[in-house]
Length: 110
Image 1 (cartoon, one colour):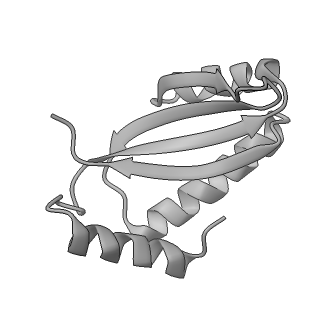
Image 2 (image 1 turned 60 degrees about the horizontal axis):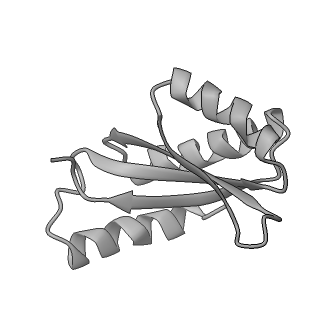
């Protein structure tokens, strides 16, 4: 997981390199990986029931690893994102998923 300082640096980079209102709502993507598609599905359902949008569940070319991508539009601060990453790691463990693989961010909706 990224440290709080890494996340603060991400926010600083977004401020410098984009014209986004980083303090406003952005589209935050969350990724999980596992060797079993079936272990990812209950986690996807849980996150969808809690306000996250299912984006995709896809396999690597050799079908040996699967990736779950969920997203949510929301306002986050570095501390909030740090806590969210910890929550996602805990959810991965709770659902028996191998890895919370990290985040990405896209600009504001619309």
